[in-house]
Amino acid sequence: MIKTNLGVVLATGFIIIIVWFFYAIPELTNTPEVFEVSAENIGMIQIADNVGEPLSDPIKMVFVWNTKIEEQKRNQLILQTTYTYKDILTDEIFWQTVFEESVEKNTRKYIDKHGNFMFPSNLEKKDYRVYDVGGSVMHYDFIGVTEINGLEVYEFSGQTTFDVSAIYPELQEQIFEDYSATNFIEPQTGIEVSFTEEFTD
Image (cartoon, rainbow, N blue to C red; front, side, top):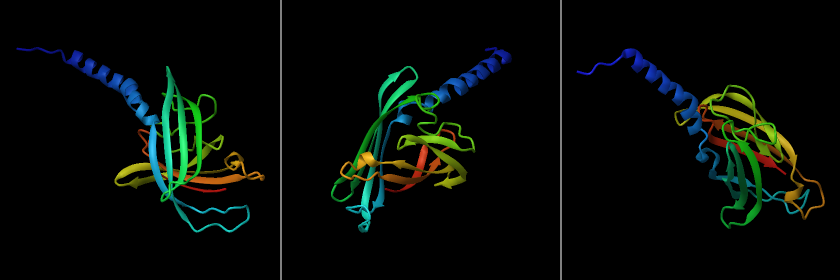
C-alpha cells in the first residue's frame, strides 16, 4: 500500500509549474533556432537604368534572407544577416547587404540601439519598434488580430524612408528608399508567420 501526502504532491506540482513558466518557456522561445532565419520570398521588381527614366516591365525576383549566430557571450548574441535580391530566372543579383547586430537573447532587444531585433514573445496589442531597416529601427503600429490557416496572429504595419546611396555607388545622386511592411506575428512565440513588403528607391 502506497500512502501519499496530498500537500506534498500539490506543492511539488506547483513548483514544477512555476519552474516551467519562468524558466522553460522563456528558454524555448529564445533558442538559437528562433534567431537563425533562412527564408526565400518571391516578389516583383521594376528597374530603371538611370534616374528619371521609365521603369522596366516587372521582373520576378527572389528575396533570400539568412540570419545566423556568429557568437554568443552569456545572454548576448552577435548575429550576421544577409539580404540578397536576385532575378529568379537568371540568378542575377540586383543587390546584397550583409550586416551584424548585437541582441540580448532573453528579451530580443538590441544591445546598442532602441528597439527589438524581432517581435518579443507574449505579444501585447500595442505598437512596437522592431527590425533595423536602413540604420533605424522601424515603428510598427498594431493593426489587429486576424487568422492565417486557422492560426491566430497579430497584424502590425510600419513604414519609413532611409538613405540607400551606398547600394548605388555608380550614381552621383543621393538615393532614398520608401519602405513599408505588414507583418503577421504568432503572439505567444513572437515568431513571424507571414509578411508583405513594398519599397521604392
